[in-house]
Figure 1: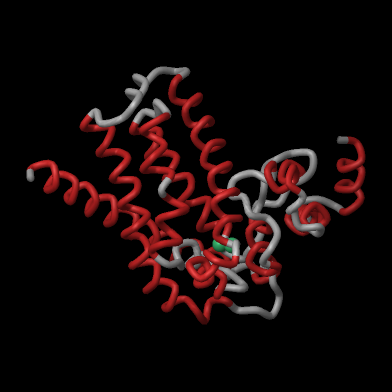
Figure 2 (figure 1 turned 120 degrees about the horizontal axis):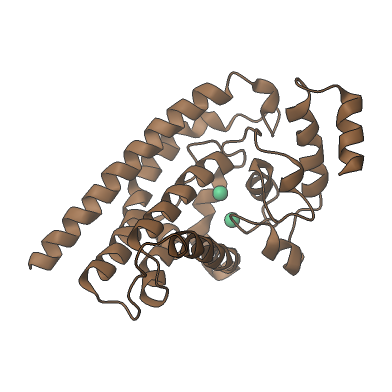
Length: 262
Ligand SMILES: [Zn+2]
Ligand SMILES: [Zn+2]
């Protein structure tokens, strides 16, 4: 009984913090992005009209996302995992952070492809109502969809010795990365977000919403490149946005010579 109360308290705390970070960051990023209309990726499509619908759905779906993180942390706290989390040290923190985001990206790619499989797609369809996603779209999905994709935070601590603080840092990174990745405004494009680098910018997941059956991964383009599901216009699109992002600071000639020299 005490354990149940403890878990419910943790779940509620994780939910409140996540929801506040969702609304606060969403409002701040929206204000910031709308000052640069030229950075809008899908010109003429205004996903903002779905804002209140998406916030309402996010308030529901975040219960599943936060259940998974609270569940994983609770299992560690109780010692109910197959491996104990590593102690915090100069090497365990960065190592487990990198291991965790690589493991999550792999889970996300294959889980996401599974959700696009026709018998399961009905659970993922809601998320794709946002054809031109905005900063509010990240959690606009069904409870089943959210649980499948976010269950990583529940099961990963069973098998991986991720320190709790690293699991929380991973979730925070995913939170902000996911919100920016859905924002529909490109500020992150650079030479390190296209081939041969596995890093991605906002365009990556925006193309998943616009074109539907490309770019299934989350943090990296690695799995999409290996499996042949990368959007054919991704790398050229990043090159275009890199120029747009660099335009105010650099002359076009300088940009071109830098691009060929590196
Ligand atoms: Zn999808
Ligand atoms: Zn999405």
